[in-house]
Image (tube, rainbow, N blue to C red):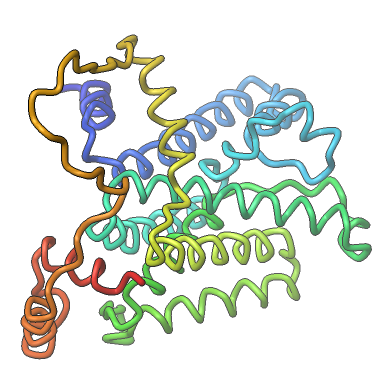
Length: 298
């Protein structure tokens, strides 16, 4: 099977959101690398490449943003440095797998998109309203860091005691990993990358609020999911079907509020907690993890 067929298969699956996000980032990176290589070989790099990358990166000045509004999202899939994309995609893979297992594909994508938008908005506000940053107006933003930081913070808020085994360090609970990420973002503001650090903080805020609102029964990702379903319907060419019932032969049960599920019994939760104490969180099945999450909702 060719690479093109593998890519097509990856995007045709509905339960493959994490791999699709990773793949989009890789494809954009490879495409820009190839374009840059061709332009350098043909001597057109200085003349044309800045305009190419301008179609992807988020500008900090508002007139440029009005000419390129799509960059509010495309910047979060764009990298120029190999190590930049490497670290972002490793974090996306590790923490995204945890969020996807626990909350599902749609909420993982919603977190990525909302984190990217929050990072972009905070970046734009900072560079246009803070006098010290207005001096550097024109500096662009690119990279998936804000979106990935939202996913890291969401995972840490959802499962603060979950443990990752880090190379050369050993087991570390993800709430401490998230704290280090925030600290590094603040350091970046002080050491020459204020735009990136501010965008990371915007993503972190969204990740925290997303989980807190979800635990309170409100899904902040619904608008993103609705837009995704609408665009997906347009691209697939399949109209959305409306089902109507002409008669009602039997009484209908009271409607269940959308997005809610019955909370598990306390006995079930006690059994799950005992299992965690014996074998750790990783030993839980997906159903047990979902029951534990529903029990944590207010």
